Length: 154
Image (cartoon, rainbow, N blue to C red; front, top):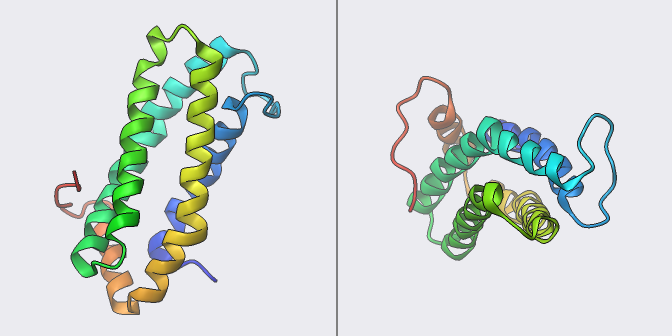
């Protein structure tokens, strides 16, 4: 199914996050110009989190809030995705002091990949099937830069 314009930026951002997920997993592939050692992965993950993931999670939670206001059919899935955000944030924020670095990096990589695959393959598809073109356009406006965004879902 073709992605609605309101979801395209999320999918583009997911591409970079999936690469991060792959390099963090034990025995994951090496990517050109990306770190392969645990300490380099720690530094890169913290930087990526500050540079990209915090904004991405914030925007997704605006999206989740919109979804929950429009329909109760995705409440469970939305709650699971928000829980993933919280767990990932907690683990990443713990990275500077993590002692078993290889294992925590692997946990982050595995959960990040699972989270993104679920959003892309299931959640976004359901949103596109449930919501009208008008509702999806409203979402696009809500996520546009300069728009006054409501509080995120907690």
